[in-house]
Image 1 (cartoon, rainbow, N blue to C red):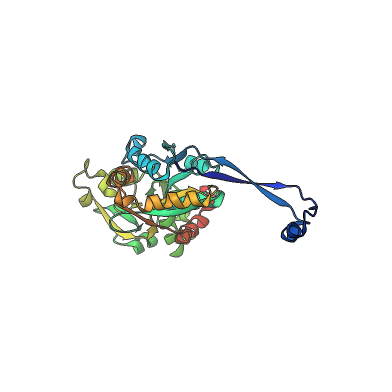
Image 2: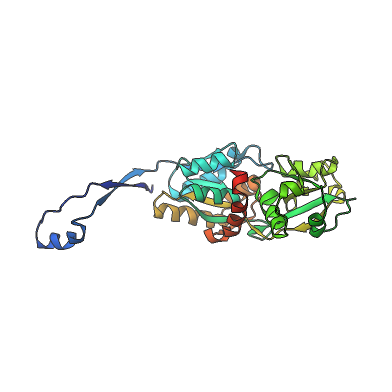
Length: 309
């Protein structure tokens, strides 16, 4: 079984090196008047893999077991799936190193990377793409036909899942700002409803004029409302948003992070593990990801950082 170590750098007091022979003196010459770092190790006997609840998986821990088994076999370390109450809890657990592997959405990753040593290594593929868009929804009988109508109308009620939702608020909000709307709360009546499904239901109940959700959130309600696509129209889409991530606690040794990354990128060869991710978050596949891909999300976050925090 492989064993890996968590590296903890502790600064040792600087001291004058005594000569222990000409060869040693030459090798240590540059360290004579500087501090010396000693690397201590603490072995990982278990890896924690963090999830947050979704509308598509009520029993994530159970559904994730095939994935945990796959990673445990690939890494030689026990892997346990844990479910946090929300993304804030998962971000904090990863920031402190209590959770080493996290499935974070784009915005959650940006927050985590800003607050701690968190690295993105992979992202999901859905419908053949590593990105998705947000959409603007209106009731079918609305006079609103496109994004410009939203910008040019006054007093509209905007239903959205939450201020921290990447597709539900941040990206649509940035597009409104770029369209010249300086005061979103003055322009629209905000209706925060906690959930993409709920945002759409506000349209059907007559409580909102438009709603912003991921593409296509109407599918979540199609079992309950068979003609929902006839009742709710889509009048526009945002720029692409990078998909949700596999993120790692950066304090782990590089070789362990590399092995975890390779295991995830090889997951498509393991039908059980991939099926587990599809059941949990509807992943169809997985591909490498880099931090720079999420700069567009950082821009959105910076625009609303005071409101979110």
